Length: 188
Image (cartoon, rainbow, N blue to C red; front, side, top):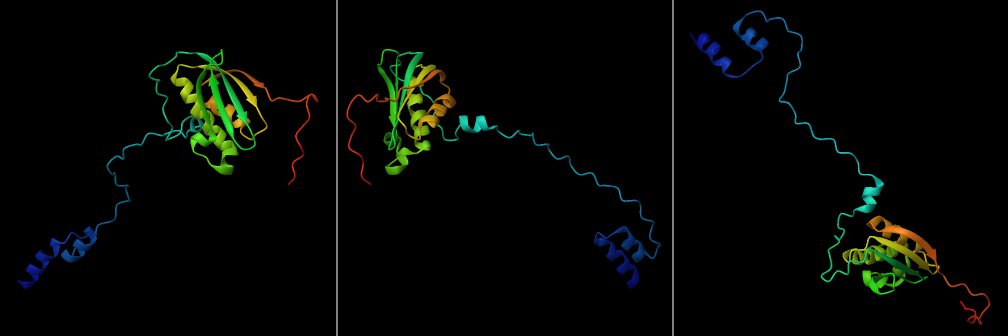
């Protein structure tokens, strides 16, 4: 009788069928071929394509949105004057007559010292000035570049990337034709 209670107490644990057969004293059944156990279907995640370089350059995660100005002038075409010196970059956007619409410089954007003369500072300057102009309804711009600084090309690219259409690019750097006496030579 003690054996019967032991046999009855053993199946409480969930054991493998082979172990249960051994406890009962029976021959273990032949193993069936392994069949993969079906699990609950996994929700398929949508495949997201990697962003292109144009999308990454065009949209910053913390980019400022263009907000319509309170007293918008509704000027569609204008002129962007880029002054790129060795120490700074200034971008001024005007209408066709020369009336100021928006401007920015490396110091205004927040750069100090030698960082003002970098190409990255020029890019930020151009974006800031272009946002101001777009707030007044500007869509097309003619670019005039002046000076030998490192921010010339990056400022033009930033204006194009933010969404302003470029109609023409002119270099208006003044070149002397032996007109007046040059400054004394710099001693380093």
